[in-house]
Image (cartoon, rainbow, N blue to C red):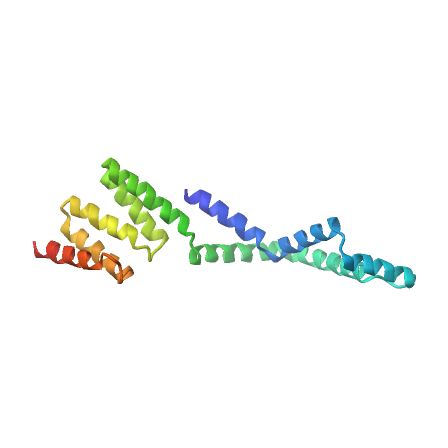
Length: 179
């Protein structure tokens, strides 16, 4: 799953680079004539000895492409480092939600240890996610592990202090701590 996410993030990062956008805009411009290009061609007819603006732009694009290809090998290492840093900073909430869904399935199936692992994965993927904490607390309560149950109930209230069930959770914390 992590390998797939890393692959997906790499594709997303590569398609958002300036070089890719430049190539896309060049492809789009050659396939779709616009009014500016037709205006420029009519200007060219009026002044046969002058270069059009699109010809000048193409020449400057070619020069920048040539210079960027020589520096692309050194820049690719730096780009990879930036992508790795961005992957660590930015998270995708979908895998965390999927972990909660799978963990809930395991929980209903009765495989509490597998559910615990999935809920912990969800917390690692999305640190401020309250739902897996509540579910972990409920699992630990079922397993009669009051210390961990109280720990996750408290974390749930820290992440989601205005939860609709905050009063009930606080009562559970007091009840489990009192035993």
